[in-house]
Image: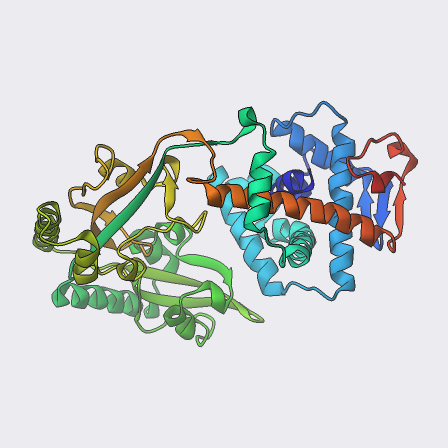
Length: 447
């Protein structure tokens, strides 16, 4: 239970900490674990939040929330005892990630501020400590279980004990290989972009507003609507070429032209806070000549026909023609970042790739199509459907990695149950009498 609900709480606490509209203010201490305190208001708020998200339980939801919080506070308490720490930059990075998620969900920073009746600055401050605690507890759990492995015998034993009617159903999965070719950009187009950025810098130095120009002209849609502003970031949040220039600017200063994999930028520093900066930028991406796109598409079609006619293997063609650094050396195999292996479910595929392989048979190669790489640059691809598996109950032959992961997850959960028992032998615990009737999953909390 710990891992399942703990992850839910990890995601939702950000809302509950700042949702003053739903929070019930109760100052009574519900529990103490070591030196960590749980307020009854925390439990009430978390229970309300879970209910609002459709969470259902046949038990007492407040007791369940308390048990999860006891577990989390024990992790934090032990992390402090073991001198495990998280840096300010890690907390800030996680805070920015979550804020950006909620801004995307609600529509804008202004709408988020309006909904919670707080400024972005106040929203950040209200859950800074909570995020730090969550990162600490996560790191403590990771450290405690990091050395755990499962042997092939354990994987087989885990599989055998699963009732046949409870075996997980494996969805249709695909294994894909790709060849990517990047259209060349004319030197005259690069010069045009640079001249435009020089013009912008001149206009800014003569008094025009950087933010206004960013809204009107920047090719970075995420920051353009905020006047090019990126928010506070550390060096590690930025690509090296960008950070090397941005961190050497003075407030208000506009940079020289900076080239990155995303395109060409000018940067204006807004503010410095320790090892973090807030800056604006205007990004311009050179346009690709339509004739060059046609040439690349024809080239890839020629490669596709050569593979189809068995004049060259897909792997050899990948080595010879592909310009993708991530897949060129492994025969073009696409690795799924969610699992670390080469199998993809349909829902995990990018829409253009899913459409390209829609009618392919195993071993066939798609028509060339236009797409974007990880940096948003235009590329052309051909995809070969290497393998497709139909939906089926999990088995050790086809789905060993999935079963191995499940077996390891169970081993970690069992380990953490025992870890809690051991750590609680030397940890102070007090639970308020209002929760004395709770039936906890781990009996250690009731002793």
